[in-house]
Amino acid sequence: MLNADVARRRDEAISRGVGMTTQIYADRALNAEVWDVEGNRYIDFAAGIAVVNTGHRHPRVMAAVQAQLERFTHTCHQVMPYEPYIRLAERLNEKVPGDFAKKTIFVTTGAEACENAVKIARIATGRNAVIAFGGGFHGRTFMGMSLTGKVEPYKKGFGQMMPDVYHVPFPMALHGVTTEDAMAAVEKLFKADLDPARVAAVIFEPVQGEGGFYPAPTELIRAIRALCDRHGMVMIADEVQTGFARTGHLFAMQAHGLAADLVTMAKGLAGGLPLAAVTGRADLMDAANPGGLGGTYAGNPLGIAAAHAVLDVIEEEDLCARANELGSRLRQRLEAIRAQAPEIAEVRGPGFMVAAEFADPASGAPDAGFAARVRAEAQKRGLILLTCGVYGNVIRFLAPITIPDAHFAEAMDILEDSVAAARAA
Ligand SMILES: Cc1ncc(COP(=O)(O)O)c(C=O)c1O
Image (cartoon, rainbow, N blue to C red; front, side, top):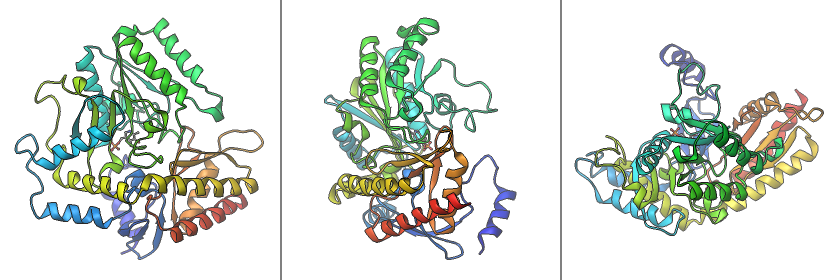
């Protein structure tokens, strides 16, 4: 089978609305390596967009899913519940930051987790409005895309967004946007458009993912916490991309010593199976009436089994420490490459949630073309990279945290060659 042949069939069979980064059709994968249908081997620095933090087919995760496959695959938790769902909720209630009683619901995708967090905030407060951030990404459902702070390609042409969602700027040091600017925009909103007494929630990512790996400064998180406390708003931390050891903590919020009222999770939670969750203050989580939350596949038993194994692996293999170690090596290597490549404007990101932003060295203008060339050169050499960013000029590095040293070193050499090739092009 050839990639090009499948690609032709894909064009015939699949909506072009489903964008694709590569036309490399996966055949099998193991830890940080993926082989395509032609037998070509790649080092995977995408990890299915920050999903397989514990690597492709981690033996513990595989064994847990296989054991569950032998028992049952689906009953629907709302019909015939199962104990591992309850036990996973207990584990998350304990691990999510916050020194207060917590409860959890399971859903299936990150977008659904964000939707449900807003539903919970609305019913708990009796208010409607939501404040979100420019550049933020919260999914492709109607509320997900309404919360998302980027028009193209996520909102364009899809008609009216959900009403009562307001965006303010997210701090981006490289682009001169500060926490003060963000909070001043909130105050302006309260003056011109919005009574704070109508705001149900503020939703933010502790590190913006799709937006470009801009970490939220601690001052911003503190300011959001104070704002929510002052006005009775629900603080929602979207940890869909930052969660599960990626930033060197189980949850990115731990680095700031502050707790949100609700936390959304997905991606890394179940090591490649579709599972998402909202965990938060028990009183808020209990505001919805029975039947108001959930879904047919919400908390599917295979995903729940995988998530238990993922949490075990993160703990047993000390993946938070490993994320910090790999991230520090990656940042050092990128800084060394930057010394030869002034197109790299900034290297940033906590733990192993690292990105490089590219700009024209003369004008400082974002250079999406350069980022695209680096990505393409890396792919030719067998390394899968992802771009992101409000200007499309950022490469984010999202290898499995379990990547062996030898594969990491190989990827670093490919990266260096790819940047050199992109400069020569
Ligand atoms: C921070 C964040 N929230 C929500 C989502 C949406 O998750 P999903 O694609 O599983 O719906 C994503 C996906 O990239 C994300 O990064």
